[in-house]
Image (cartoon, rainbow, N blue to C red; front, side, top):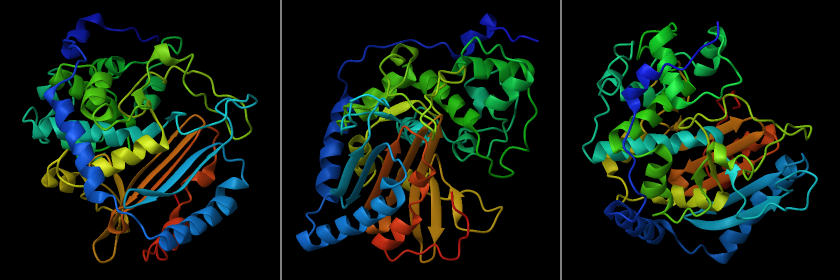
Length: 388
């Protein structure tokens, strides 16, 4: 059957919109960004910088440069860029060369912003991680699902991209975040497992978290992120995609150069739909050092592993993937993929190394950064056979 929008349920997540003017939060964020830059940035010796540049250049030549890479790469140590390169064009076949200001769809790397927005609201006393989702949406039909189980990918909810197929969603109508909540309430698709029983990566979790951000903050998700993170941190080429951006957004392409088209799943946000640049993401990385933007306890909770059902070094925090290596070493990261867009965002905190690769023509090699990490640091993955 064809699914219709249920207007009656829309009141559950309707919100009051506020203006986007300057605020105390923005002013504190701007000061935080300056503090992070001062505390984590170091002037590397020229010899070390040249050595790092050579190692990254070798990685680029052998892994990306000869595989049709179309995008941007930036590697930094202690906040200082040691390698930066832009390849290809924003539109294949045109002359609009990719540059430092070309924004890319970062796909699931968006989840890091959604998660930290929830944690910022927690710091402000506006929510608690153990709050049930039913506190925000009273008709939500699944007891036992909390903000924490959403953030840690342990809710058991089904992926909206799959269950909408089963209920025959009319694909002529793009799905919104509100539609995801409404269909969960109306159709009650089966949970994949009991909440908090195990890890299962699911985009539905972060679509719902975006609605919680709106409900609690009283602002659209895009406005809250703009005012809380993007503007204060000087992320001038970063924004949340909306339908109005369709004509100007950087397009994406399949591996063979065929452009990806707009689909009915392209308007949901929180799980994806932030566009950014490698330089802006370096600012985001630097803002997560120190304790000006977030309390240390908040950062510790975000970067703590929560899933131990399977042995190994792979784990998930609150909106962050991670490798948990021996001697309490962690690599905090989040990859992204949507249509032809690829994103890799790695924070090797123990060595203050940042690896950011963005592309808009599908290229699996964008994710193959383990050899680069091993070349740049003493860390090793030799006993981990998997390759994400």
